[in-house]
Image (cartoon, rainbow, N blue to C red; front, side, top):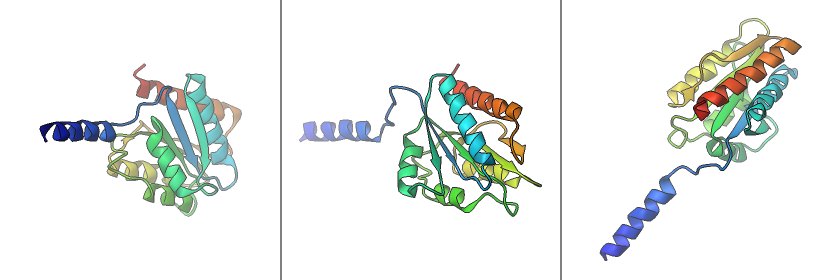
Amino acid sequence: MVDHIADGVKKYAEWSSPVKNDKFTAAVFYSSAYGYTKALANAMKDGVEEVGGVCELFDAAENDMEEMAEKFTAADAVFVGSPTLNRNAVKPIWELLAHIDAVENNKKPVAVFGSYGWSGEACEQLSSHMKLMKMAVYEKPYKCIFKPSAEQLEEAKQYAAEFVKSVMGE
């Protein structure tokens, strides 16, 4: 009987331990009104890959929420991007966050980014929300006004690379 209890405890510890990826993985979730936040998302992906990570991009308006929630949980680090429309992040991003298990993603390293036209509240709102979910939100969000320039895309790439290095402990 004692052996069964010990086996059960061992199995429970195994099942409840986070799965360690062979290679550093990141997932970039975004929604884009005019393509500007999508351009930043691609730059973030390039930054992850520049430092040797594997990265997947997900347009929150185009992908299945359950699948994205699984990818969010499985990734070593996550990027979340939204434009600011009507002084808010867009619905697909809020819907994605509603599908995320806060307990399972406790201390998940996450970086926020986006473009905006006038006020730029989306990034701060998302950062605050994910901090309330007990995620490890990285420094300041990366954001730009309207269409990112070539220089801003390079900055976004470097922002992503620095975030990944900080998560990897470099």
